[in-house]
Length: 287
Image (cartoon, rainbow, N blue to C red; front, side, top):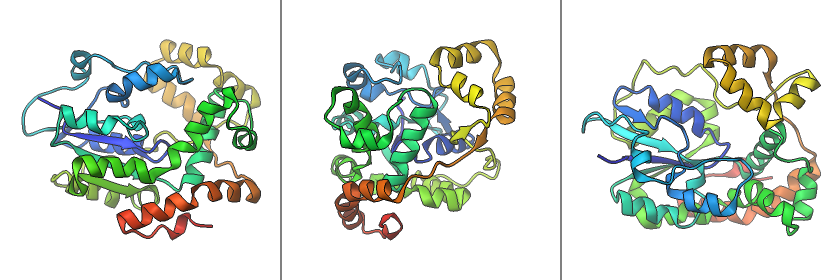
């Protein structure tokens, strides 16, 4: 048996929410870990990304992540690294040429800021975003620029999946629509997968939100990777959820108008190309 569909990105665009919604569907079984990164494992290992991610690089171990039960069930996974790396679409096609591809796209300016804020909260980046933009060629900034800026040039990333799988097998959705109506959003994807809606899916629980604490010490401790891993190893998930709910709250960080426009200038041509290719209205992304 094979994996039938792939949520390939973009990062910080609601893929974690979709993964959890689909995993509750009676005819879907998602991988036991959200992001196996199997088809991008060689690229991630070669780049030595700062997230300390351990991709699954063995096919047997990759398939062990799935509870293959019967042919009537669909199996999926959600590795956001698959959208960026150029060879992944072909690798997935070689594995399963009939695979369905799901892409969620977010306003690239908002996505860049959200991604940066996440990395800062997790202690992966100390520099400010303006400095990273102005000094993109510096050795210690190259990976940051990739994560916050290059991942937002969607046109070529989406195009390669359409070229490999055909437009009818690639479902491109917008993060704004997920935020507006997550039930309708998910049902459209289920329709793409040729599955009926499921009324038992929990759409109320938030996933992967940008949460911060009012206590600066808590934020500092949370930014230390070792302490986060220690907490995960010490407490069960139910306890961690209670701690998370009591200590952290959802907070969006605003940026200056000058930085917003600087980011938009980087993305505006790519937005136009994407708009034309997909024949969709992306005016909400334009400044």
